[in-house]
Amino acid sequence: MELQHLSASEFVPVEALRPGDPITDVHGGGEHYKVLESKYICEGCVVLELESKADEHFRVIEKSFPTGYEMGRSHLRHW
Image (cartoon, rainbow, N blue to C red; front, side, top):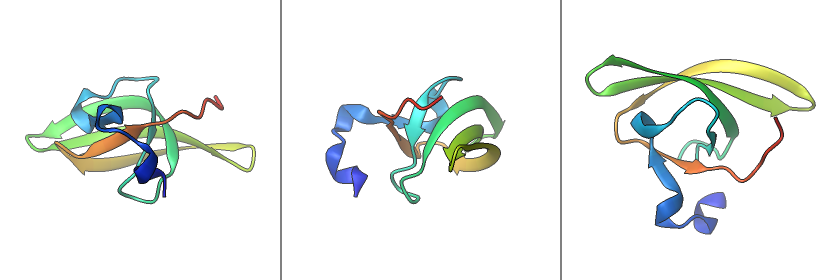
């Protein structure tokens, strides 16, 4: 699992993410994304608009996370 390959310095809380950041959801399946937008919806909740690529197709999704949820920095650069 990719989580084993990341050091503590490679984890970032969702509220610190910025557009363009390549990330991996290490606690939710290990998918790789690029952050398109980050929005605070209410205290304790961050919604991320994310882009992913699979089978040469791009998709855009929105996912909500509690503040403090940590993502891994992705080393994949396929955008």
